[in-house]
Image (cartoon, rainbow, N blue to C red; front, side):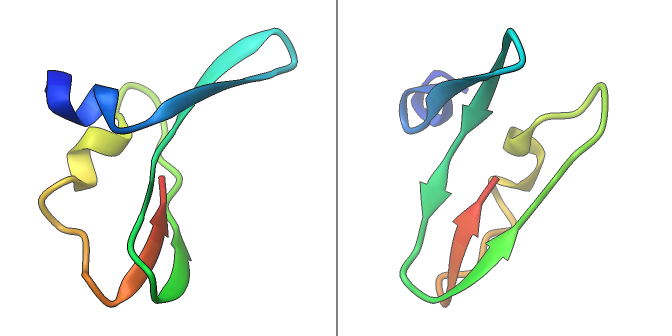
Length: 54
């Protein structure tokens, strides 16, 4: 989990911290999750051919 967290970054939006992680070199794929999940939920399901933003 710590390795996953270190591979992303935070941005601020409307006084909230949002964690972003970008991976891959292919076609863009944007994953949006709801509460109480996190982008970590998709960490084992990423496809190498996609450019993933979660």
